[in-house]
Length: 356
Image 1 (cartoon, rainbow, N blue to C red):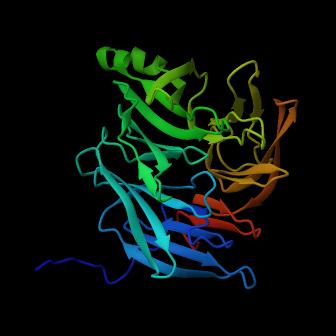
Image 2: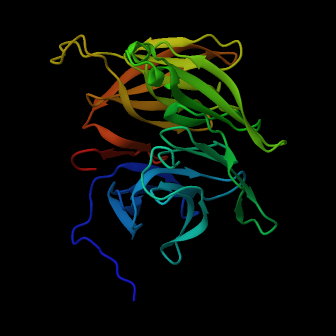
Image 3: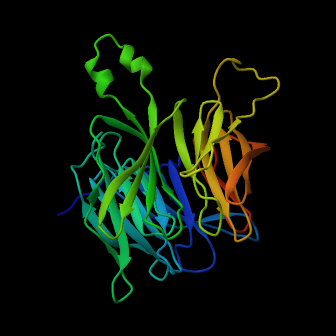
């Protein structure tokens, strides 16, 4: 006999969401995590209403969520980081209206632990690799591929660990069809841990580290590390290849910075402030969430500050060299945990508190 417990009232707050073509049709869906349940939400482009087509209880804590698509594929897969110590790849089956578990690889102990990966997930924009990271020390990279029958395969985990290091954010850099590249926001705390006076902790700085997955040699190397002047809270991947200049946007306190490897100089722009702000003017302003929208002709980002203001961010480039960051005020809404822009023109806002 197997027993399970279900709450009478489901959780309504969404902690993370992702969008894509999960059913294999041209219509986009949204995958939303409500802590323990995973919902498939389908927006109606005619009426604008949202319909939950499927909801499943995971019987665990969903820590992170992302979507990816293999090269030449027509549907997106869901990669989930949970407290089970496993990386889970799901596929939504529209005919059965359920999730099919494609892969489930165990790499650590269960529970939300500091050194067990699952808190952060980043996917290569071309769907070739997935990096799953812990708050401290451990990062694993899985290579995605197809077998002879066009089924998704996953490799053994490749380690990219770094001891005495906190991880703040990780993102997959769009480098076209070159070796997959992941950018990580890290901080080394070894000196601060060994200094009883606390001075080293005050002087500690974040670093931006690029990890490259060498597909030929089948291992991960630390390609480049740079110390950052300001503390940053997350990174944004800029479309690359034929779609854009590549690189990343670093969101830090009061500033947003574009950075790329090579001869590209850093481009900075201040975060706009309200003219008659009621809050402390000396208090720093930060972006808390974002979404990216890309078509064949253009791309832009929507970023939300901790006050709820949404800005449309575009990049001005000259022969693959970014020269300017432009920000335009869009709207003010309650602070969101996730934003999703659909091809039909809808902006899905998963608010931390309040209606979605």
